[in-house]
Image (cartoon, helix red, strand yellow):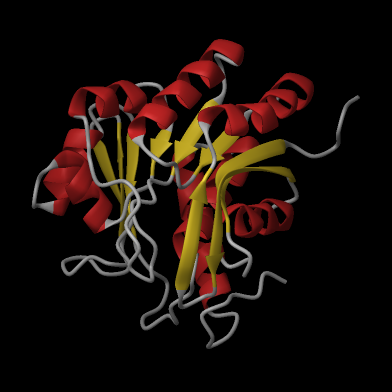
Length: 249
């Protein structure tokens, strides 16, 4: 069956509040006129400002959800959010690329929740670099880039990671370029400036940005334009209200 919309899949945590994870991703896909699918990598108990509980799903539990979607719908782009550890991530990436070699994978490396709960703490560098060499885009914030690269300088960290894949360094948490995202791609650095200052914070804003990029790529935009349009979309969502939970429509 042919669908009139491009298909995008998210593998991420289930946030019952809908502010982050697969629920936020699918809302974003649909706002970009894509057909969005979701696979749970974890079950969480949280609100927009508190984190209560976390239950990780095994690789097999993730795979049994993912396999029918990949083999039946053949998405061109897949976004990955929170994953238990790099071993599970590596197994997942290996299976995905074997099943669908042309699949463009975007990884939003959620290492901790905005409420403070830490997820991935141990980084095997060789395993990480193998994973990065098989994905299309990495979207870390400053802290995540520093943790993944073991470098203190955020731009040096992103540049090191960009030896293996495209990297969008998000500026929302940066003390040096707050609000400005930096796209490291093919030995180039592109600055994506914020259109306005003092945007309200939102639970799940990183999920929204990366899933908007995924939808734009699925819709045929070049990476630079996909990131720029996703940033503007995310700014619109941040301005949707003055609460931590965003309105998507």
